[in-house]
Image (cartoon, rainbow, N blue to C red; front, side, top):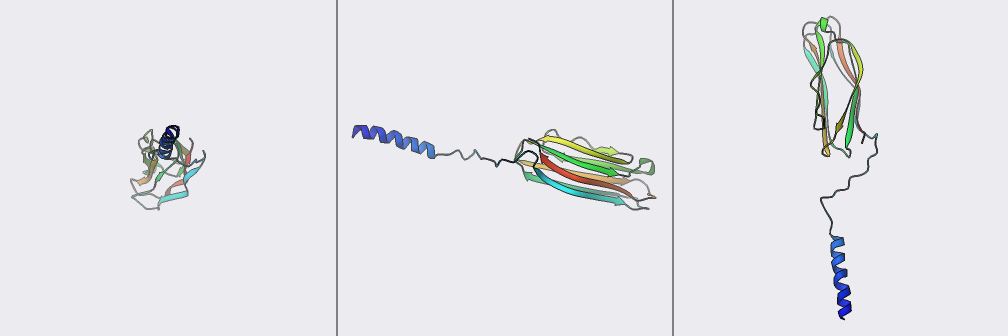
Amino acid sequence: MKNTCAFIIPLLISVFFVSCSDEDNINQPVVPIGTVFFATDSMVAKIDSGGYYTTGLGTLFNQTVAAFKVKVEYRLQSNCDSSAGVTVSINDSTNGTPQSPEALNFYGPVDTLLSSVYQVDNLSFYYNFNSWLIASRTTYITRYIRILDLKITKVQ
């Protein structure tokens, strides 16, 4: 009987500890590199001929992501012309690292691919994108800003 108790007590203790779990340890699903978390084909804002105002476009991504790094990329196209009083300003913000740069300003026609890689410090990642087409005087042709293929992709 003494040997049985010596065997049963350690067995019960080991079963108890095995059945306890660490509820703070949450297993995230495996998300492959290259997974697109967010995508939009195009966004367009324009100022018609004779216009004299500011117009803009933007989008907000706020989601729990299973990633350590994400890449934000998009193509910017515009026929802005500062000599005609029309410029483009882009502001974005994120809780990723590094923090977004100050506003990007464009003073002439542009067709370029822009991208940034952000370290995700917590699972809830946001990226707020805003762009402005600014006419400081009356325009004589239609001016536009186009954002094409905006996407947020897992890179690590």
